[in-house]
Amino acid sequence: MRREIYTSFLKSKIAFRIFFLFIACAILPIAVLSYISFQTISNELNKRARKELHQMCKTRALDIYNNILILESKLSLIGSFAETEKNIFPTHVSQKYNDYFERVTLFNERKSISLTAGEVFPFSSLTGDERHHIDSEKVLIFIHDAKIFMIKKIASGMIIAEIKKDFLFMGESQFYVLDANHAFLSENSPPFNISERKNDFSNEFEYADNGETYIASCWPMFLRSRFLAPNWILVMSRSTSDILQPLQQFKRIFILFSLLTFLTVLYLSIIQIRRSLVPIETLKQGTLNIAAGDFKSHIIIKSGDEFEELGASFNKMSNELERMQAMLIQTEKMKTIGQMSAAIVHEINQPLTAIKGYIESVLNLDGVSEKAKKYLEITNKSVDRLSDIAGKFKRFSRSSAREPLSKLSLNDSLKSLYEVLEHQLVKKEIELILKLEEDLPCIMGNDNNLQQVFMNLVINALDAIEEENANKENTKKPLIKISTYSNNNHVIATVEDNGPGIPMEIRTQIFEPFYTTKREGRGTGLGLAVIQSIINNHKGKIEIKSECGMGSTFILTFPSAQ
Image (cartoon, rainbow, N blue to C red; front, side, top):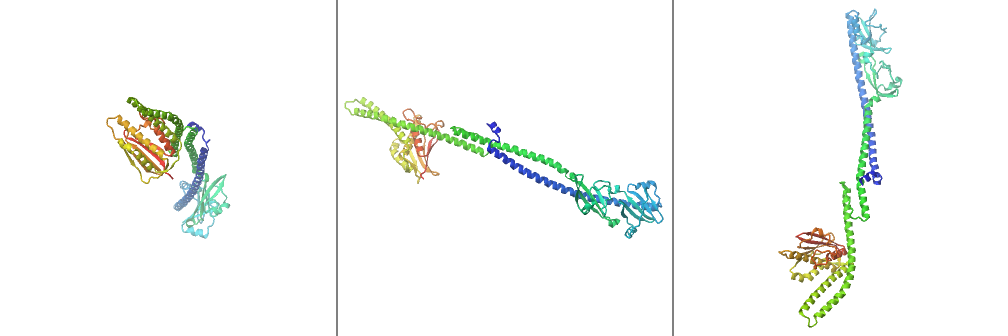
């Protein structure tokens, strides 16, 4: 059956509904979470990359400025050496400065002297501010034809040196230096249009090159206060692919994680649907069995949830239906027996009446011997016994049919019964205790039938005690206790005795007609069957509590009259 449930997956409307509910509840949060996470991380990486690029630009600007300071110190050394050696530089000394300068030229009033390898720089005149700057023993930086020069005044004249850009800018790509006129000083060719970006060199901007998007960051270099040069602008750029490279890896991992999460939710949804579908199919099969008349059909559900409780309720319902079916069968059986009893009693009463009349006539004749009278009296008692049995059948027949019920007090019926039995009970030394609740609610019932119920129960208790005493050396005094009380709109009466008790294995059989545990000649097996028929007519129920050797208690429950 479980395999059939698995193979019929999603054929059930409930399973289909739950499955797509799970999927919808999984896809929507996963999609939203994926989008928000990806956007958040992308923005964070982009923001962090821009910040790092800006910091790198600042750091590189400081490195360039430090290189300028190094060049300044080197130029000062060249000036000191030129004054000491009278403007003559040995080859090994000039080669020492080739890593820093393209060429170094000494200008004085008479001539221009090249101190290192390279051509002499054609010197032009200086402005008043520039002359004042170098006269104060400061280094001057100026740009001519996209070349960078440094000028320092010494005693014999001025030293002009062309700076090597490879040393100054460290020869890196994606790294650009602009002067105040937005002319590029670095060797790298700019991938963006200067005329379109003049207003962007004070902050960040983006540009495209060969289908790739780049982010550029700018940093100003302040040279005027020390070198009397216009400020430079340092520009550094990085491609967005480099910036978002960690995001691409995260994207792959996140897609795999989202797919794994979706598959996990899908698997758990199928497991949950199957877990719910098995109890549903089990309950469905159980109801079909009940509908087919199999009231003994029980189901087993071990789910640890409400389905298990529902299964227990289903089994309880099945047991109740089975009990009610047995009660209906019993009622039909009682009805049939009642009809048969009426016919049998009618046929038996007529010959019994005639036999009893003839016996009494013979007993009244003169000349009948004592021995004959003795046998006739025995025969007469047997006839009376037959009449008593026929009377029981007659009463059973009447009780099988519904007699009219009226509002009455159960306490009054029990008191009347006690008055009838009191003389006989005292004579047999039987103790009967009545414990009746005051102000007991009334019930709808028939007084004669109810007295018959309690009389049969009392007689059965006496017979059981006498049977037990007959089989034992030490006899005990019969004790019977009848109590009444009310509970939850019901009136309850109990008949308790101190007899031998009723074994568990026969408690379900004692209400069947003609079933008796009494020895032959002491009972017909109709007493409890009649009692149950009467109780059913009163819409009540009867229960037994018994313990072998300790006695029995019959509990009768009637609905109170509303």
